[in-house]
Length: 164
Image (cartoon, rainbow, N blue to C red; front, side):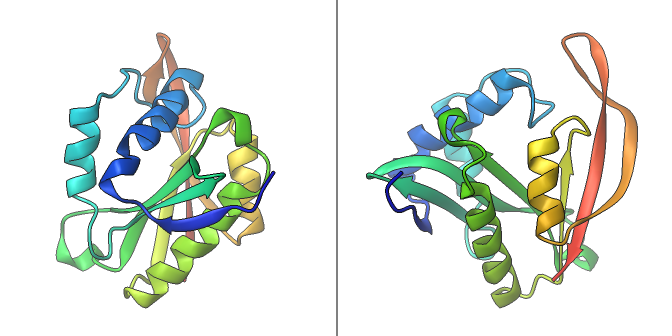
């Protein structure tokens, strides 16, 4: 694979971000979402990601192969220093270290923007994602049992955190 470039997402990246997000929904390994998203959904989502709540893309050969974002954890001001993470990698590029690069860059941006903690939610069976976060120093906080439904079955969700 050629060199991966990490950069701030721009509006013209939204179609690629949408494709990768919908892969995560289809593959049932990264989100409780079950309905595919459309361009208008992504546009509204992107409008909420400015300033400290950034979106990054990973690009190889001028093609977006992954994205990551810092999301608001809770609207209460007491939680302004806590960010919620999302990282999605194109299914053809998973397990190649792109998530690790995006995660490190998000942490650097988070520290520069007065975040003191990142949290994330993952499926206990998503061992690839968990290994990424464990290697980066995230700890398991606990498991929410029967947190959602996928394919008519209850699914547990694991909460993880890292103090920055």
